[in-house]
Image (cartoon, rainbow, N blue to C red; front, side, top):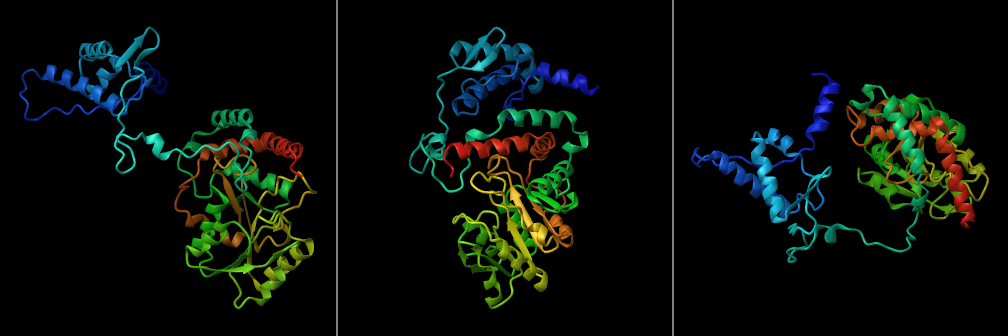
Length: 397
């Protein structure tokens, strides 16, 4: 049977529905058909009552369910009719058979001692009118239309191999697109093979922590807590670097008791102070890294979103063989789009790439293809400019 015929058959037969109709081995074989009919009706009632089939859920056509369960069509049809009469199900011409609204649901989920508490009550995050949490993007600015178009184009044009297992460095198409974009927009010097895709800056730092820097790291004294945690969880000692109006005081690196394996910096936009690393300090720390053969980790935090000052390029180009560059789309697009990256010196690529495993373990390759399309078509650039303008107009300065 060809692929098209399988697709047509699947569409005609409908959705899957799991029901446990295993017969009682001790039951008499006589009357087995009636037993299965009764078991099917009981299983459907139970699935509705315990919430597995929520109100509004569409059931498979009776022909499809009969084929899946190995029952006669008339048996399934009569059970559907029985449950419709009892009020468990509803049926409308052209809409199929669905679970009736208002059916009792006892989920069984709840806090200790609160039998019958609803599952959503337990796990739902509190809703707030105004979120002033640090570093939160304006989610209303997510480019829904552009993302949908890029996703459609990416999926339609992708080779079949794109949907198979992927090497741990991620989608080649996105790595090529990113290499060009980062060179043009951030001044980063990178070949696509130097890029390892991750799900976030945090996952990128944790990858570095477990694969390369397990002994000692220096980081800005003020910054996001996960910066330190990404390395200390693997045993590294993190030494603080003072921060002032010119950014990290990199001259203090020479005063550390022991030379760190790596130094983590946010040269474009230090958080939470908000300053950029001064040009003379950039030059000093790049030269120090070359002279001491130490790696710098550059988190390009908010590097693209420059609504209140002149653009500040990435520091990576000052010492490409000693600076590891990392970034993500968590601020430019959304933290829900799990895409980040590392641009590595050539000598580190193999170690970091294979530390992820034999294949990409976490990221969505389909999302990576959509982002690649946005970059290739210019939609990503348009979105960045739109976000800058929005923040500026909203009083970002």
